[in-house]
Image (cartoon, rainbow, N blue to C red; front, side):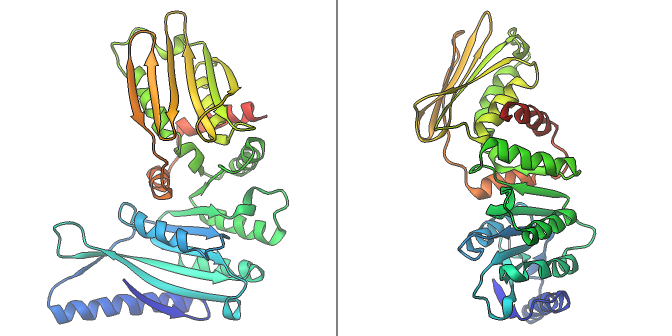
Length: 337
């Protein structure tokens, strides 16, 4: 890993800094007499965060994602103490694949600004995105879902979303009505949106899908007319609503959201009912679920808490439209209201 600091953060200075960074790698290669570094980039991945760690966690997640999704990573964070109101730092994220002599390196740019200076970041971002490659925005701004979001921040986020081919958010901490209302407004503007709360359901959805993927199965999913989704907590989280929506969207099954005791908060149990069979998948510990059917199928699955890296990896694997998510979202919007 090699770093340099640039101040003030202007696009031409950042690009010059990147050029100097790669030039230094080239000099090292000349000294060794062989190629030692492979530069990789498939997208520009922007993280906008107002978390109190000044973007540290976001930077760590980006560095992990580089292995599967090489990119020019840009972390935008808020710090009221930053000298001059705006500064940038360049980092080369490098790793050596197992059994290889050559390093793979990606660029990471960390820009820190006061809230007052956030609107001035946009021209800089426009100037440092990689031409002719997708731009993805991961929005970690807590205010982004708030109706009280300041006009300055809202305008800055909209400008970033206008640059992005896809915007990824995490609605986990939001009331479903507010979360789906915000996402509906963004989707109505033609934006491609992903939600990490949807990605958290993958360990639940996969076992259920595998049951019905068997072509020899006689009792098809369309025959299940009643679905119960149980949750722990005062209100259903967005993931609970997403699960209910995903299950009921294909065939318009009757859906019940049931509050229940359980392990932690959120999704606890899914029960599918047809005239000839019941299928239940329920949490039996903090990180384990049990799936069983009245027709004799029974299995236990480990469901550990998915890391931000795992969730983002899944979302970045789909940069175009996701018909499954879109159908579930349309139904979730109805259920949330």
